[in-house]
Image (cartoon, rainbow, N blue to C red):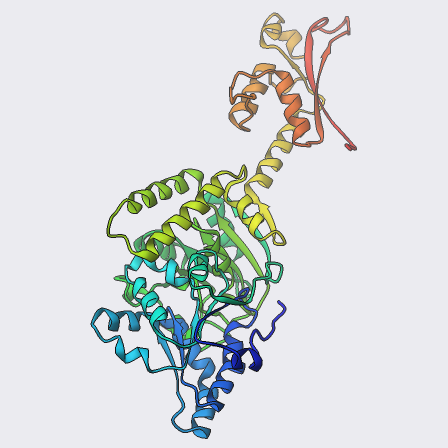
Length: 476
């Protein structure tokens, strides 16, 4: 990935007491820019800096990454401070009438992973951080790689955008999309090795994720506030917080607590898997957690039925009178995204490709389907397919002389309908040969189905019509 500094001294010198936004792709250097440009500038000007994070692991990683710099400048400029705080601490103090402790304490605020103001709204408290950001009268810089859900606030606050996202700049080489969980888990197991470690994110209940971790022999990761935290792999959490480059596991199963912010420095983590993501941004964030190698991604896509069910629940929640401001933003934005996904013929995968058009996307089930149907058609090349009633008129002795593979036209149609899900224009199962011929052509398969008649007078099927499958050598 192409990395760069996203801030410079001139920009910092010209900042006023308003909102700014750095919207930049994951891994390009957002935190690095704060560390190497903003902090030295602030220390030399005796500025007090607040860096807001949203997860303890991210907070600890940021502290570790900036420790040397903070110690250096603290020794040179006594009294200058930079504080790294989870936003939840400010929320807690606001809820307990202690907000004054925060409002006059800093000269500049950076909010890393700022989209969490909206995406964390499920916890019912993010309106307080909105209140804090609106009340503190200093430059406030919102930093995120997935700004879609934050945009209503960016527009509300009239934030000056210092940089926009280049979706072509990514470490994600390829994403394989799956529809069948059985295939997904099977290939996941095959992929794991010392030279190809895997980070898997699983949506759903923590119990379900822990069960899956146990079955896969994976390290289980969840937040400290999760009731199942006693089962979490504390050693792995500590290794990641300390930016270790050789983690003592080949496979991690994590809840959404690690969706954003944390960085895995082990270069052997080369694959990231996502089970039933609810938003495209979830996938993009998850795949950015492994920063030291080009990533092969795997997604078990949510079905349209799942997404419709989520939208129904969102609508029920939107009817509540006491809904928080940020939660309402999230639910409306999420419903908008779901409607866009449902309008795509290719569902979640097609919508993802529209958002990130340069990433190679492969439909694994489609490939498996294509291979299966080609194997089936190959097995029938050159075979004469007769009607069942025509074959029933022939004696068993004569029937054994015919080169057929025990399949009639009726059986062929039934296989194409039931096993390969071919339907008529109106979705009907009652199809004819013309529908199959058209389908083979539209799908660009190298086969054709043609009608013919047996003209050999010595054949027991003389005069009978049949179908024959031919394989095309070259097809334009």
